[in-house]
Image 1 (cartoon, one colour):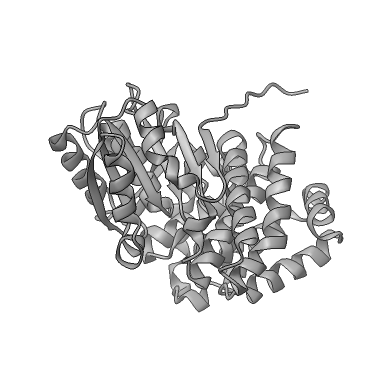
Image 2 (image 1 turned 90 degrees about the vertical axis):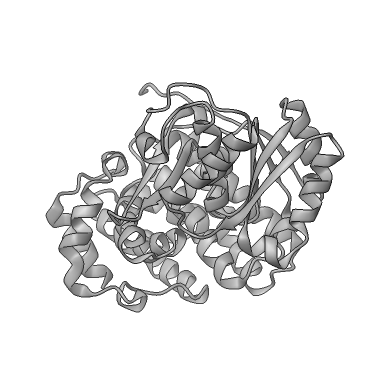
Length: 377
């Protein structure tokens, strides 16, 4: 048996109305002034900002709210948040929303204890000091950021995405309250849910997968396959929302320990160059990357196919495309408006996202990546 390690953080508070514990959890972690990153949509369309302030004030914790976060945050946005948090004397961060809000809160926590700018720490293990405590409250069932050690930002001038990857970014606590996901629009439900599905499949086929991570990833896939269509069609179905939130967490746990693979490497340039949301980019590329694996690692795809749909690998590939089509996911890169003459630029960007490519079960050359992109058009 190959050697491996398993890391699991944070402490989890789950179930309906678990958000009510936010103030208590922040207090237990020693917070006195919280920097709170809230998704703009939530801030504008719900009362979550008011409720957050109330829960923190009830526990004598001051709050500095940043609610201008949008999809695919840039390093400039991250650095603005760090500056505000430092000036305000914040000693704990809270992320409420999708992956962008959570990643920003994690990065701010890291830079409150490490000097410099966001871009100084993009890479592997560049943070030198432990961050301040972090509480993550996901309101989308997709990114798994509440359980991972990564915070991703776009370097706007270079049109490239890069992640801060550090053990110091593991959150101390996460609150999984399905009631907070009920306002999620169908298209975001679909794209974030497919992001989680990608995490689960990729962590299952990763070279670093092991006998503990594979059952976790498989359970995530099963939950998503069954519950994502339900949540997509009826966003008020609390049971489907709850199962999706737990699936996203499990997929994130698989990701944190086994890593993702080529889907993420190939999707990063779509976000950096064209601003395609991360979940959508992953979802569009997933069938084409899996198809490229099939001739080489059919046993792995057979395990996934049998586990979640009771089919053979080839039939599963058809079902996966039907699954995505039902969810309104674009079927190819052309439908995303990506010009076909940019393949070389996409390949160059993908080759720079090295760690997922190293985790991929099949070694991919630049020529192999060209073929995948060509198929995806």
